[in-house]
Image (cartoon, rainbow, N blue to C red; front, side, top):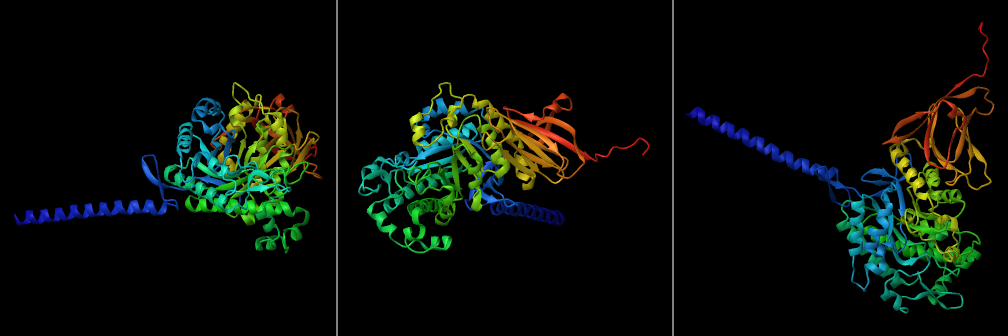
Length: 567
């Protein structure tokens, strides 16, 4: 009996120890998940039946020093489209006229407006019902969003400010023209207006922090094509007083200049003055928003172009020459992004990669040329993303042509919006790039090259590599001539449109480079899937045409010496 009691005690002790161990193990495991899988936003995301801490989207440099957008700790390429300005103001319109036209375009991200006038229709009364439903719709459609904050300034004016802001012209004073007449643009020197915009934007960030736990929203654009139109600067009393002051210490350091604005910058003083004040306003809005919810943020640019005078394009906006100033004045922004509607797409891409600025193209034309330009932007500049404007129109049954007068006023080429038959080409480009993403993010930077025909008179180029060169001849076609090459030790992949390619020996090298194998195919999850082997007559026509396509060349080299049969 005593023995049995001892046994029972021992068994109870063993069971107790096991139970104690399991409790400790469970608590330790939970702590491990919270500590090691958490980040600053402290949000738990459910996936595969397990809770884990979901990380914020962020723009950071990878191991090669290339700035990339990371989503759930994985690099992410935005293959997107931007909606028309007013589409999101009506949810039924979105359901009937927008989402059906986007579903088969292989888009992974939609850029759409959230307007101050709908978020704060009455002072201090906030309404996020539209935002809530838009996020729900995006989740259903399995796409991410970039929110475009149309606050104080949109295309150089203040049309998206709430009615209560528009009506109080003394409280929220307007920028003035040289003759002292008022504009419809609220002055960036109106501190109370900037404060109210900031408060509404911060409320939006609070809403996203509390309600967008799965990070459907990837980034926020702060204002839209900011700047002052029809004048080189604001001539309101507040602006005139500030213009007479000494330039800020940050600009004294940046440009090694002193004195007031006119003494320091001469004929460019008005534009630099406006850029400083707009950038400081944007930084206040974005910076305070990021303190609440640390989304990547950027401001987009209406580009300077002929006749190239500030005020014809919005004076003070983040045009290429002002990137250093904007970076100094608005450090809260992750990047400054060009809206590219000009003919020379290539030069603008290059300009917006200077000064360490990551390239993101939130707006560009929706003509058929977009199908090739996206390959250049990815291959040459590792773009964060690419988004033609008015994307819902390219598959619309009822085509809406942009008003020629409006395009002239905006200094935009009409052909940028000729979207007839764009859809099949852009759809295929996006499909091919989605399959390549694992390769795009892992290949060494020197292993990927982009090319593009800058103008109709440019015949082609020669890309020089270590063992051989590649001659590219630009072909005429509806989708333009552009693309990218991914290099490997004995060959390359080419993806793009309207290009003839020829492998040639290096200068001074009398050896020969020959085709070992020529294939068409595509990448699927980063793995090359061969289709036809084109080692027959197709070798006489090494080219891609209007339809976006990926081909693979395997090469070998040999001496050109002719061997005698007795050797």
